[in-house]
Length: 255
Ligand code: ADP
Ligand code: MG
Image 1 (tube, rainbow, N blue to C red):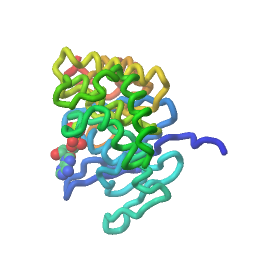
Image 2: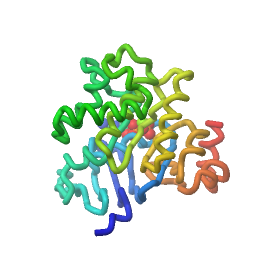
Image 3: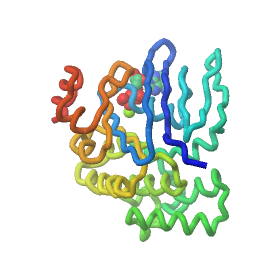
Image 4: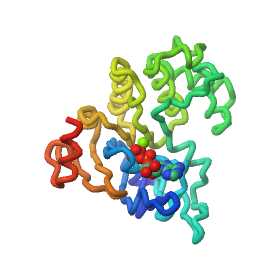
């Protein structure tokens, strides 16, 4: 069997909150190895888009296909009709890293990274521990395995959150402004970890305001405005030579 050509296919995705339309028809294909930077003003729906991709939010309409199979389609009353991929599968194959890290404060670093392996993947604890230690080594934090998150810097906590997501071996990793809540001197270490993942060919969608970083990181940049992908292209096309006036204004504000 040949692998599905796309990791994710987003088709005519709409999301409303009450009467407020936030996403108004998003179409985007994500191929293996793609690194897509999503940029746009605050409140433009970047987080909502990522949350619709791992079904923390239910799309109002449209489809998301994960490795060629539909995850779920909203029914007539907005209730989610399950597609061929169960939501528990989505949780395994779509990893998420949040702005606020969202580590469990009462668990050690190691327990945080093991948690999904034990509860979602139902791995035996020896195997989960070994994998968690490998992922912590990869982000340079094996020696913090027994520490509690509150004793780590923000940058270290975010690297643990990245290790926790990677431990699940996701087909795609979603990162929602992973450096926005960090002190400036801690941003670099997290961006360095993300670049390391990029060099391994991992498939990622990154929401960021760090346009300089996006330029080096991304294979493709999308600018979200008014609930639509206003402009898409290579980093050079969108960030250096935007065609649309609105994209130009956005980029000028950040550079
Ligand atoms: P961004 O991440 O680009 O800053 P968001 O996706 O967080 O934007 O939000 C887009 C819009 O949707 C905002 O107007 C926000 O207030 C609204 N919104 C987001 N989540 C909810 C929710 N759970 N309930 C109601 N409105 C929401
Ligand atoms: Mg957001």
